Amino acid sequence: MRWEGGRGVSAAAFAGVAARLAAFGGWAAPPRAASSVDTQHASGIRVTRALPAGGGGGGGGPPGEPGAPTFLLKSALERPVDVRGLPGGAEVRFAVASETPAAAPRPGDAPAVTRLKSRTSFNRKGEFVFDLTEARAGADARAAASAPRAYEIEVEWVGQGTPAAAAAPGELADKFRMKVADAVDLLVAADARAAAAAAGGGAGGGEARAGGEARAEGEAARAGGEARAEGEAR
Image 1 (cartoon, one colour):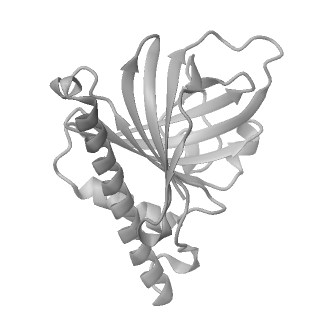
Image 2 (tube, helix red, strand yellow; image 1 turned 30 degrees about the horizontal axis):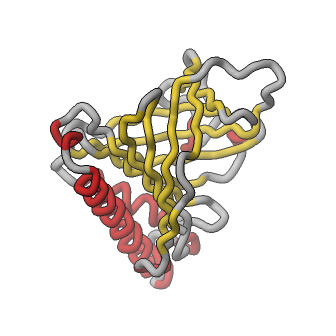
């Protein structure tokens, strides 16, 4: 799920979701933090370079020296499906796309947008990962460094190599929907707490806003790469 700055939940609500996930003791591995600079090109190829710890990303400040680039091409496979009328006015969009390794962008394949990201990942049973990301976007890394933050939560299926992958497609889809519902519930509760704090003059201040845009992503193996199911809540 992704919350975007102009129409998304506040930093206070995002922090509330992060705190609830951090307090949960049932993760398969310790939470993992990483930062990167991602450049999306007109062709759809995404160039990702890891950033050193404390070297920028979505959290603030200029980026540090990036690492070696990796290249992925994301392609939509199905038309999205919108689900409306969820608690708190959220809307969820489910979509299916593929992400495959790609060659470096060709000369003339102009960069469309660059995003600086700081992400913390929470792994549940080796099957789903909740990714919490602060991101800033601009025409290039310098512009992104001074851009306002956007807040994202991704629920990602990573269990291709586990026994869970042998389940019937309907069962896996049900598990994915439940994880999306968990994330939406966390958002609604955190947003309500932030709004109450703002109304009472407490933590959260005037930033608390209801609604927002979110994306929940799940992955499944496909020939030639990975398939990704996405939900976008607004």
